[in-house]
Length: 558
Image (cartoon, rainbow, N blue to C red; front, top):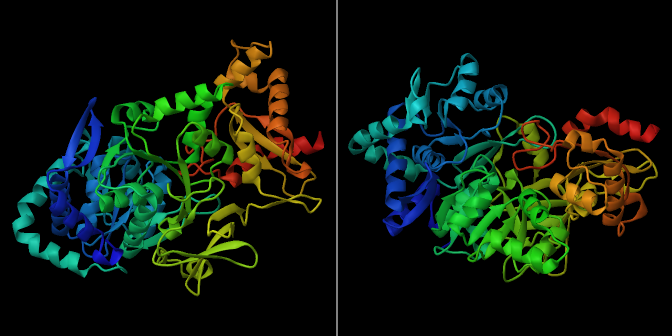
């Protein structure tokens, strides 16, 4: 069915519930047991949520916040507030109170759904700075009170109101068209302050349907979902595409429990970012490729048909390792401003070194300076309250992505780097840091890597080892240091020697100016909590370099 067959996301949700009724739509684990939510129950709770919002004075186009980790209530609240004609503003759950306040105030949020007491404490800390916020609903029953309504009571109130408000909800659904605003998503970004990306019902619906066509999956599929719904990747590819294809959407408990949940759920499909695939590979890598392949297949289970990767560049060596194991790891590409998917590899047509062909309805072209441009129904409405940034990003209908790309003769797209992240050495040689980092990460010894060197005569890098693999490598070298902490290991000369030797081998096929000459071994991983990674686990280079500027510059004086 085409995107035009559905008027908006609410229409899609209602019709799928009518079509599939008692079938399982959602599966989640709570108190150690998996619980199922049918399509009809999913719809009934969303409508009750919508009725309660209407009664609370939320009007069409009003902004409603959703501050929570992934959970079934997130999905219900999203569909409920959309059914009320409202606009979802979902800050990322790990953000600080001050960061949350900026987004909620900038968007003018009037009501807010939150997950638990921890998030409620953040809101209370900044509540006096949110003059437009009229009410808060908390999902966890024990956290309600003191001005916060319980989710269960909010839904029950909505159910009682439904006979009176059913016609009003039908009018609001009918009034939503492709241009109606559905969400404002603040980009965490790798540089600068966040901007509110305005995405419409038409943006999200067209992208979910186009991606569904590229993914070649259907209602019989079981999708294990763990990436945050506050990020556009999982929001479209898991949530809305799952709605369109009527897949069973299973919520993982957490990133830490993902391997356990894979064994329990045995999904046919998983959406993830390269970081997860790298960590799994590093944990099971063996000198024997057959043994490595067997371990990988055991982790992802007997029913898996498709692994998808997005949100950041996938190192080719990782994709090749999974393919050698008989696991098809398909890379795609997009950004928040494009709802997000621009291109995606298909099971029937894929090239590992690329991000695939554009999905249906999406146009791409390469500008004279190599920048990738895209046009189509997926391109955002603009940036919230920022007409200048909108005019810079969208020109003549084309979205300027800021990424460098190339198209081959078969229409497969390759991303070669970020326009603003291209390093220029003092010799004039240009380096794409992600390519160098990808080559390093192909060695299981390395867990994370960040390349540095703008304006200098050679490259340096910050590297975080996979400490289990590094300890094994030290024992193999006859230098066991098992009793030392990671901080002690990072400073040990034997570790520096091993890291330098493995880096030299990993980069041997690159040009001389692309090889890292000196490195700093860091004990702790880059993280979202330290603001060094975005929520989609992309490197925030400016923050990382600020944290290590003195150490990196000292490498050039040594």
